[in-house]
Image (tube, rainbow, N blue to C red; front, side):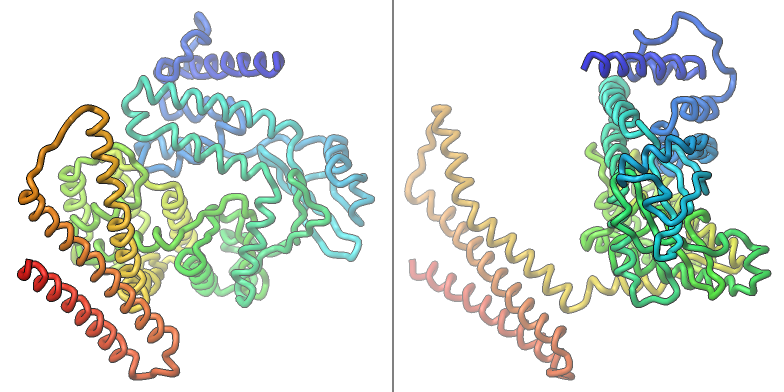
Length: 549
């Protein structure tokens, strides 16, 4: 324990020294690191963005990955910081062969040349967390074996603990840090980095994508070999081919580059709009093109998820943007945000009016989607509106796809490519099944409110009673209250009936079109008519009771 504490104190001193040497004393002050700052040392004369990038490089893997994350956050950082942080490279010297042998023995129980038919100790690539080695299984299958660096998990765990502490301090002392929820960003970063350290997580992700694209012969996902995989070693089928940004090689091989873009966009659309799970890091190093034109996708350590609720909120945003409606855009963006502070709705609306005016009258094919996304993120940053992590990952992925698409096909338009999918997503909100589902949910919420209301009222009166407050009412004064409660109760009942009828008839009509055919529409009308008649009957009988009383 003492050794761990000592290591943390040394790391605090190292962080303060590096920040001070690179002229970032404002960060030291905001994070409470003054007591660890050296008395005096020569400071860099470079710009703050460059100093930050150099400091992160010097502080090692955890901070490099944090910088790479921040380089995609146009909703938080200004362009000069984004440009500089984009230069960060996740590279590291190779781990020596004897150390790799020892790690394989620890994880797989024997030397590499026993576990595998062949194993190349010289790595294919070396990064901050691990490195990749070519190998062959005993059945002749060529594989890539990812091996994690020794002690990297322990070192990163210490850094993440320190980062959380610094983020909390900064949020207390620096309003801007609190407004942008720096603690939340740091904690989300820690969660994703811990997942990246567990290679079984990446293996499970690869299997999810393989299942989702099982029937698609344009996409290849590597197979996972679990017999030779652990949390620190991952064995995957080797994907061979040309890198997607090797234009000369693709042309020499006669590859249809626009066709590759079409397949890639179709795959991305399926991930986002159908599966709800997408590859969040499709940079050229993770995409290969095989001689037959099939796209090989690797590295599933960073994966984003878009659930049904988020897809609905994205549909709202697409519809508001297509209608040039700043009010609905503001509502959609607030729904997609994770900001906990109050939003200046008028300021956001004014910025969105200006944003919409830039693109008014232009078709999606005429719009630079990369520029549109960046301008929208600038609006969010100006209003200190922070998007949910999965939406940030989605936008980052779309920017990568846009850049790759234009590189492979200069006529490519991400807006045109995604328009059919976005339109389908928006219209899906108005399908009979979707409407029935929302109405049923609203009816259930109303019913729950009606059930919980008496208990909540009782609790209020209990509090009043405990504090010695008395309320005197005459019976005649209760009559209007009773009437209003009865009215609310009738509305709740009517809402539940309408929701139940619409949901039931809607699901029957939608799920069994073959049986009902052209009767699907009339069935919906019958359901609405019956539920409306029942609601009217409840209202009429209630009014008659009030008249008699």
